[in-house]
Length: 483
Image (spheres, rainbow, N blue to C red):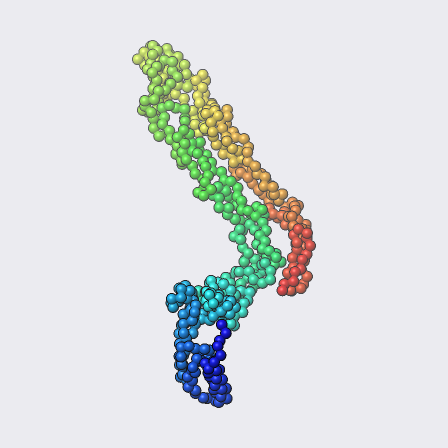
């Protein structure tokens, strides 16, 4: 709409000119206090005002109370808060910066604030803790970076000790905010069977070690003699056999050897004895079964049974007048005697065989025909323990405990002599033969302490500002500048 010309417009123009003259005059003087009243239709800021408000600019705390503007509510500092509802009350949820804007670039913000233009007004949002920022007087270094704090400040954040710094993948580390040189201890992987180092700043290496003299612990209670083999700690399997046939011998990697009594492992062949397995001594007689049936091998008796003392006796059925009338049917029982016209055997004169050489697979038995004690096979085909760490699944075979050799002791290491010892199991003795360590940067490779190593290729160029090394695949020396 084009404004009409007339007295009111002329009056406005004259008032603006008069106000401009006062401003120029004030600028030329060192100190002039002017009482300005709004001219008719002129606002204190030079704009058209229809309200007739006035302001005394000479007052030290002079303020103007602006009218309510369309689209916002005025605040005491001159800022406007978005008022989408048009109800004269600020909308909720907006943090007001106070400036009007068209884009976010029109808004000022602190280093840890993100400015945005929302419905023509600048609003701000706090950056996340740890976000990078640019603060006055703060300069980023290799181990310190300006970052936002929890209270919205931009401050230098120190990288944790041990963090990599410098121009290479390794070789330097952060320590108390400074970038310092690293050592091989900084690359320790916790494995005693690896050699840890930084390779010319390019990468961290954990080279496997083979050394049968280097002690380590594989964490397995079922092995001993642990040593480093190709970067891994390995031990030799232990023999958990306790020498007793009546125990089940097993090994738990966490707790070690365990020995469990086997109720069926004891059998002395005598039905009159009660046996049990003692973990300290093996099979032992704990008593006698007075009600058990037995056989006294005497044809002149019947209804044989065990006594409470462990003897096997029967009722005499053969008639006799004297001892000579009794015929010895079983020489192991001794010469029978005539008692009350009956031939009976005296247990006191029966032959008792020495059991000190008995095993699970053999037992000293008396031959009824000769009265002599001889080892006799027993428990044919049943499991037994031959106390040989190089065999497995041993069974009683014709009086002997025999098992097939199943132990495989080949460690594929040319620097050890592999063997299996019955009392120990696999054995790996280091030798001093020739070998190949697979490293092109070494020569004259020989076996040493179970590992293969050679003389390193000299690659030092006597220049202090280079990282000297050798490519293990090609064998060529490398001299990389250390910036």
